[in-house]
Image (cartoon, rainbow, N blue to C red):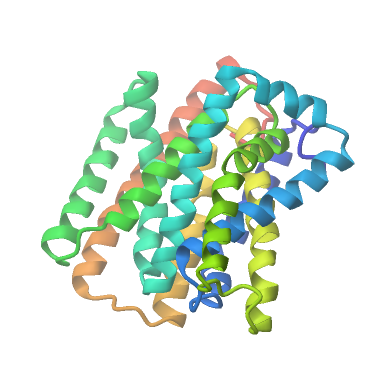
Length: 309
């Protein structure tokens, strides 16, 4: 399946579903790296992702395309901003997994579709329908419940939702394809990642290549594990509406939630249930409203056979 040439909506759905399914099992992968510091894991994710993507660019003979993007000041600035957003998202997620906050990471990704709605209103001046306003309000109440009832400020959830929402928005409006864009992002931040690993090596505090075969295999593998779903996601966002992406986003936090409660046995009290119930209620209202709005708009703007919206 091509990531760059097939623009069918069904292809977008398949790409998006695959990306969110892979992300859903990320806690299992990063739990295996719990003895490595989050910043070292992040540095390896960036560097090995870059190497993997450079091989893909070389195989497709797209260096001239990437070079043109990097020479364009506007595109280079956009790539730098998206690189900062996704790196922050990666780092906070790793911290959450290692610290045993998979449940809060789940909350963050449950919130992301509603954050997309809010970003559309704040940054794109999109009109919010009545039930969208209700959904956003319920999310706000859910966050307040986390703070005052659970007694925990959900900073992990808020950072994950906001950074990934902004990243998706910026990638949606980018003029370049998924592969060259993602390669450009990682190339721009690779020097920082390499400098950090050099510093770790010189200070003799680096875990990689220091006698633990498991880490010597998993840290390089983090590049492939990182790049593949991001490529799938970036390709999907170019083919699908943000509302459709919002529906697919439920896959990842649902898997995270199940892993946190059933496998990792994280605390899940009645207060947690109230907070999550508010978020889930908001998502149900949002989904019903979005489905109804799309159904009403389709006859006037799209063929009835379009299965992706």
